[in-house]
Image (cartoon, rainbow, N blue to C red; front, side):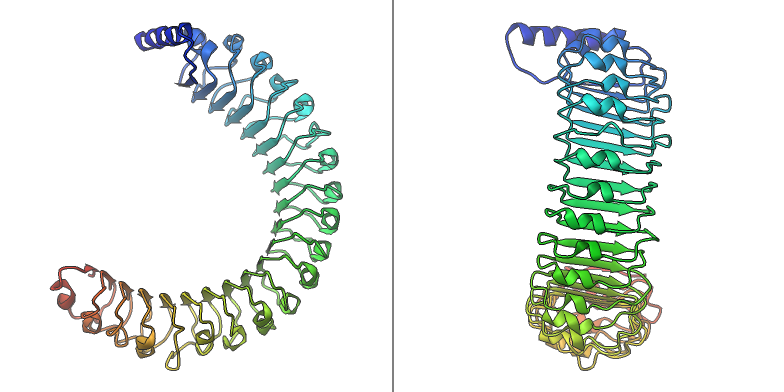
Length: 474
């Protein structure tokens, strides 16, 4: 209580001297606000934490300066006292199990942001008259079935509905400033209300029974779409000719083809993840495409990427019928290439990608040799992990290498090939079959070596004697 009195006195003195200050008050585990009335009356930012015995905000009725209010793990049953906080701009409410309504926010003309998480709120209706509202996020509200209340909010830019049983998005059709929609774990079947929203830039839909993207065809400003775990979604046709579309991510949706993307001339990134095969032919000639991530059991037409001259990063995972990287070269701007759980048998193409700086090949059980590998001149980081290779001698021409990772290559007996690399700083060879580390002992820039779990390794003394190398070993 002495601290409270001192703070009250200090704030009074500041006010008397016309000193402008921003007062943020955080209270934890209290059962009444009466003790703090003077402080609350001057606060712009109030945070209540774990006030489980606090059921109402009745003593906030004099908070004329309040702009931001945050309530975590409180026993609140209503927030009606906020209704007279005319300057209030932001409200965050999380884990308040007794709060079923946000009625206290009704009519707040300066309110710009509302976030409600893990509360049994049943309606957004109170927000209908909050004309300055720009951002709304409701998450894990099990009784919230509708976004009604957001109609005609002219400045609303962001709507996020996550883990709420919302059945439709009809109210959003009149939100003409909407730029971002996130809808996860909801009952939404159609995106039709989004059709024609001229400013909509980003749509993220996950774990919803959506069946079509067609409504997005009439969203000319769209830049990014992400759909995941939508079992009824079979087509990306709704994305045709969206001239500003830059990012498309589709994961675990039974999309049968990517044809519509051929007309998305600004496309910069594609992520596709599904077990069924898909042709990459529609990507051919996309001059802005910078990154491609393909995850699946099979895919065809990898060579279609040859014509995507702006590509900087390619990741291919799980494609068992990918036996060679020949179809990936030459790509003049490619900097990072990741091959994960694929059927490749040789590394014969990356040398054509002169800008390549990082190459990762992981869990490719058919890759037994890199004998003919010719590293591109700028290669700085190479990982060949969990592959049955027996030698890395071909790396001796990669004079720009800074980092080498051959972890879990159990058939690899030696680090020969790394000895003459002038810039090599870090070597990872844990759980491999190496028997000695003398090959890297003379690398002048070497500073870190990890060789744990190498049962045939006899000694690391040659590295320890240097005194300037951090060695991790058993």
